[in-house]
Image (tube, rainbow over all chains, first blue to last red; front, side):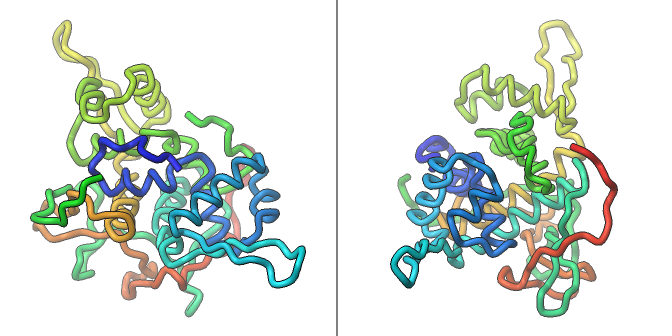
Length: 152
Length: 152
């Protein structure tokens, strides 16, 4: 976890990056989301990262509630790391990064689809009522009228 | 730039993270996108990061085509770092992170809106035809049928 690295940044994107902004974090989550990986050895083999780093990342995800650690059913069976709803809801971040990389760096090997009907799925900027897609140039940030006062 | 850190990852999200996955990178882009910052001193003051790190990040963004460096018009006027379309199109990544942080960590101070009509804007997972919003649990990755063969 980046911990308080972004402590002076009162911004929900910064809050998110404190949990998933370290190297490899988003790629581990990607493999959990889209490859269905749950075991240490699966992540390690796919990513080829140092085991101590992978262990630290998984520990962080469990502590942050992005994953649940489930002990293997029989002795010697490895534990499984299973995405929670909180973790699963990072999918739009991964998909947005992928779309951007596909367009601006180099097309990658995957597309996203709705498993219920097989139709392609993309991340889109939309008005809340859902009628119109919004051009990136037109999206601006506004200060929220009110929010709970929480001291970080 | 992370450079070849993710070199064994044939994945467009990894390609994207090689350009924007380092600490502070996405927050610098956020300030360029939504605060309209263009000058070194603006980013430095807002983020409070070491000047050598900020300089490296801006240099990387210029080299990667996310920003253009424009020399000040008069002698002594500081250079400006202006987002290109490539940089601007990372907005959905920032907004997706913000939405997630708002929901799962703590509500931040901003909302996003369409400047043309003031309506709230969100990142949504949508079928390509745009009719239906798709639940995160239903989005799966499929191997692309064909793509240009590029050796990285």
